[in-house]
Length: 411
Image 1 (cartoon, rainbow, N blue to C red):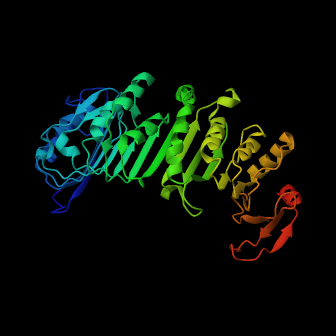
Image 2 (tube, rainbow, N blue to C red):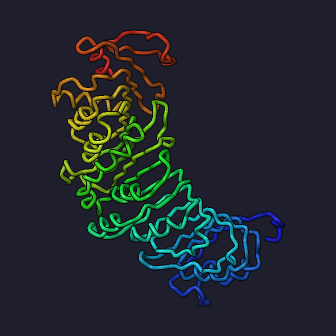
Image 3 (cartoon, rainbow, N blue to C red):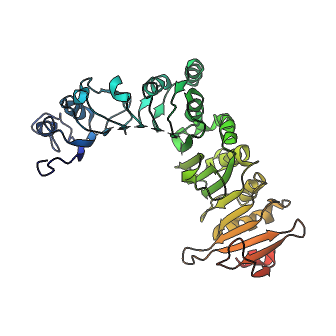
């Protein structure tokens, strides 16, 4: 601290227990009493991150009464949910320009009102009732970034009642709205309650865990409530699927052909793991994705990427997916996906799908990084597949014409 002279410092402090109280002599790890000897008179804290049991963190926080130029406070408590940590009212002498607040824990943390007024970035993993979350957000008038990955717990009946009676929350400066949950309900209802700019970037991340999946699958009707949000952002143009029955992910996002999912106005990401092959096929996350794709991407999806080196799904699965997305114009496949599609078509004997398909990109094995690009011209049944040179751009003439069926068999 002495060597820093007048420079501001970033402090990341971990407090570890060994089954004893933090103030006993047998305590091993960074002792709160030692930290308290250093911090109260120190006035150069820029960011402070405290990780450990809530008793030790609380003891340190109640000792910090000196004004600080601190702009970021992060707390990660290692304890079970539904416990409460209250930040002292006179924290930093009530004089701290904190703009970023992050709670990476499942406990409930009560924050003084004066501190919340200046928060611009709020990240929370707390377990709280929706009504309590609303109360916190109402105290953040200048909030620009919201990331909630906690558990908004309550019964379905209480959830409906709380959202029905909730008054709109004004967040006129919000730019990013991210929700991570095991059910889309939290995102849907928060999107209704929050009054924010139309162009705010929204991201919904679903974490489908086996222990909670049955509860989530019964709420699939909530997906339909996402339709107005998707339509307001001109629809999901891009879909990327990767994985198998037991583990995988999908991502759907809005924007034009060049938009990445990080820059999209609305991104919908789902991830699952821990499932077994014994589950009924029509209730697995992979099949729920078929329903989601049909609900939200049928009219607008233009680009589809299938990245499944080990599909682990019935061969008809891929044709079921293509039938739900008739507007696809660009298809990107990995070598294993090409084989899966070929087998799927032979078994299902379906009619032609993807009538508007105009470009295909085949990504070979990891050893061969050179993709093969194809353009499709004409209408069924006279459509032709044309292979482009590896360096071809959209305005470069095709280099050769190949037979579609023969080319696919060769891959």
